[in-house]
Image (cartoon, rainbow, N blue to C red; front, side, top):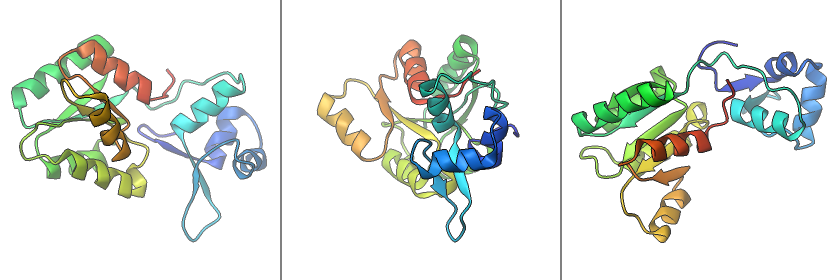
Length: 191
């Protein structure tokens, strides 16, 4: 499996689980293993986090995926704050981190860097958090990316409204530990 691969074929899953590809197809067709079919094809694709969940649920030994460290993209127009958060995430959690300061840069990095998580500062100027989130959700190749809104002092109803718009989580941007917990809570990559 290549570095940065977030979605697996039935053959990939069969090799990881040491079973025949037909067994993986049966798991998929019965709904035990969730994923999607390629439009216009019978080919199946399984997100890495779904395979990890499936393996944990069935007490299968979880492999070390060749995805490397968790890749995080920080979308924030405040370069100093983004750089500080990026450095803290690199040092404290050993993540691969890039920063973007516009919608265009977020889109380019989402394609090129293939992040596992995008952290979006809701107060960033020049970055529309809901537009970025919707773009990620609408692009089949990016749908496995987790999107976390960074905001301070949101009410529970505001946080729920963001989750209804497609965000996977909302966390306080002041505490690095809280950001790490949110990242770890939304990703299921096994090391």
